[in-house]
Length: 104
Image 1 (cartoon, rainbow, N blue to C red):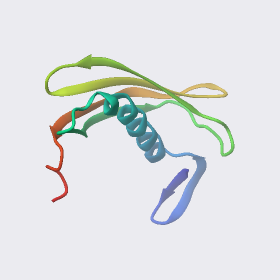
Image 2: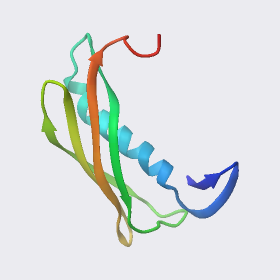
Image 3: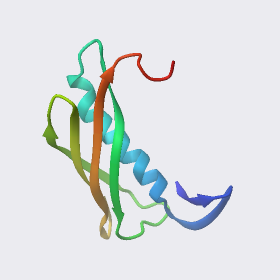
């Protein structure tokens, strides 16, 4: 989960790319139980501030909460916490789509 570019480690700390993944997973866990049988959701926008580093081996925690829902999308605010405090924060928006519409 370190910062890697061009197949090499750039920094031996928690990478922003992994933070994006963890935030998307947290957002999905929030929206998924509320989707109907013909509904799905897909990432629409994400805004992240990666405020401080977290070293390899440190535990991180993603806290996410829904801050807005309408007929088109679900908005989530999040914080990523490490032993030293806030590692990152931001928002993630998912838009609703018809199940099966994406990927084929």
